[in-house]
Image (cartoon, rainbow, N blue to C red; front, top):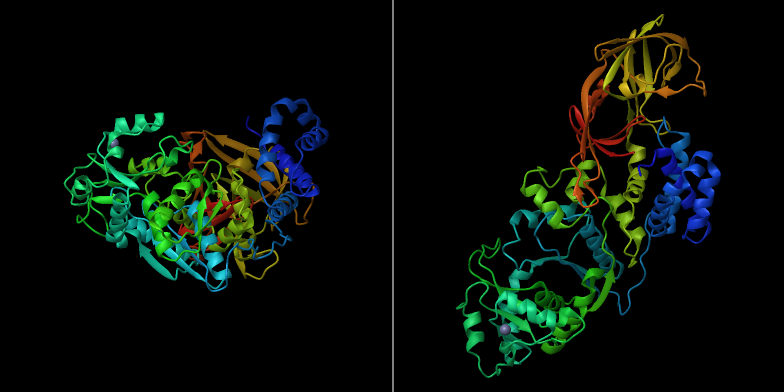
Length: 582
Ligand SMILES: [Zn+2]
């Protein structure tokens, strides 16, 4: 069911309040009771509301308490100061410490961030990189950026570059940058060694057979060949097999409950042009094989991985064990992803490849390039990630919690301006032309602007259609008007009004406006949820067209503004902006 904003806010507020009274864990029943008690309308629709309450409770319980506190305070202030923007009194510690590492010695900690350059970095990568670097700095250690680039079909120079730029943007400075492919010959040596030691073997079965036997837990004949017969290993590394004719498999245990141990692939043949090594190599190690060896040889003391690799940890250590290589400490954390904003390449790449989405920085995407373009700032991403801590909880945090951190940081530097969507003209009788001076921020000195106002202004259509003759409204920061007449010619709406006082009155609605002759055509791109469940949302990008004050043309691209009663935006060009968040 679609919840209206008031109900959604009520549920959130009740849940947050309850969570903070119970060590961060809201009680479902208590929240349901509170919502039921808060309005007869909610009470009579309770049945349909309960599932939404359950969902919100789950989401909010997954957040750390300081984030819960921040969200609650923002909800509170959003209600009371909607028109002037949020006044934020909350304070979240600027650096939220992560727990100490086990087996860590100052100066000896080495961490690494090992992305595959097979797409653009997203918020999940940001989490990994921030945590990896955080610990390296915490212990005066070193931080390695290592591109795990051993599948030429996936990798492009463009993607290496995208990762480098994203880390720079996040203010993460690797001490060492390297590629797994730099070590390809070395990895061959370790592969040969494993086979010669009888810990791996060349398998020439077809893919279907490998798949079948693996699911049944049965060994194939290749595994039973004596290790003294080295013909196949020579054929393999000398390149005498074609793609899909042979692979090298680890000798795990075909009957293992953990299917990752059922003789997984260590090397395969891939015909493809590698962005760094060109056409020189056709035999490529898998991530499962390369990662432990690289970690060990790079001196990594603490290797962080997301929890989805859990089943492969046994293989990671088994490979090092059989090769007699040093074992790093392995630490897991949960993968970061938001509801409605999938980070998986499977869901994003087809949109780009089929031109449904034009670029990797399209503001609807979860890529860091998109977030930057949308107006998120690196400090907010860092604080948000650190606030999540090292939990293993699978729950996806609501996107609003990242927004809350961003809002707090950009609010003091965002100029308040007026924008009217689908403008409707109002002629104001008996008002004398005047010049008014408006503050660019209600409580921080960001300068002022002057606007000449005659007898004609514009308001948003969504405000205009609610007006009736006789209504009074306040034009924010200016004066009150009384609606005299509303005229409709075809689809065109014109409103006649008269000045009705200068004093601010709590009993009448307040709306933003743009003065005629001070207006500029302006549009705002508004990203919405990219996926609704499993389906691409065809309405995921709205374009709001309208008029903004001419002052907007003085703002440089990348400036942050708050369009009053609309939300925060990042200025993109002379007449466009991207919606950041409310
Ligand atoms: Zn076989």
